[in-house]
Image 1 (tube, one colour):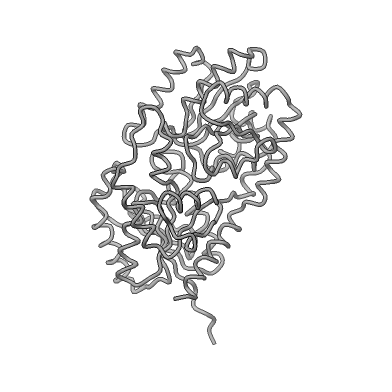
Image 2 (tube, rainbow, N blue to C red):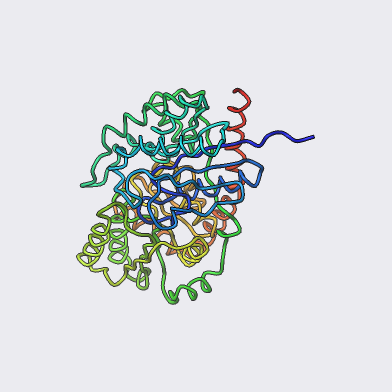
Length: 415
């Protein structure tokens, strides 16, 4: 006698692979979320295939996430990195590759889950062709980004906004990481509230946990400094210029507290011209007289990243918009206070006055004041960090995977 057939799930992630290093190119929290949830779904007995576009190197034969969680590389266009704005032209080829792979492998799926708007186009197509329920996650929403553009930042194109609207209308379930994004889906895209499910992201407490700050600084060769940290891709929408200007404001307004303060960025450039963003920040730091206080580190593996969080006095998240705010959660899990812009999911992930400070707007002076407020009071800094670590214990990838599985089983049962 055999048990019930395992749940089979197809995840679509066209523009970036869950195996990519977060913090560079187009890789970020979405990659982490897909990888971590897929791994735990497989451990719980599901069979998961993640379809992504081949970009060369290890993508030809990508390593599996887990025994029952595979990454399937589909050739669509050149097997090399392609600027994200050029990817729509390759979506029909990608769809054909997915259909061919599934036909040749002789597999079927209980549902399809598309990630990001580019994958939503593919998700809608396979839903129609296979008659399979569609779940959609967007990770960022074009209309939300357009309401909060940095100076000189290009708006998201109408093609993206239209594609998001079509994917939302076609989805049997839409997964949002916070109630804030759920409200944006309804208010900006007229999504059916009955189809929305909130599934927060999480952290791995075996990696992101409180560590000894001095020991972490020694491992990173950062002893003798006070450290403000920014983690993630270096792009205008993340507000790195605000962080540099806030550093300069803090040094000018309280040179005693800020006498040994440095600002470290951990992350790489984003987009085909991302190097100019880093060069621009270096020029800005020089113009403000703080070039010797700004350090750039490349993207780091997860365990090494935990050392950076632990070494920091404060983690800055001055983003113009954030769907969730995974960096803030990881920092808090490591016992480090967060000073963040009061936008999107950060309003939920960071509890103002308890685990960190939320700053309304993006005035560098306001962010500098919040930064100094934490640095001036070591006792409060420790209390904020301890509260953040306690809060983060409730936000795990196991909990995320369990809630995601509940969404999947709801659809599979209805089918």
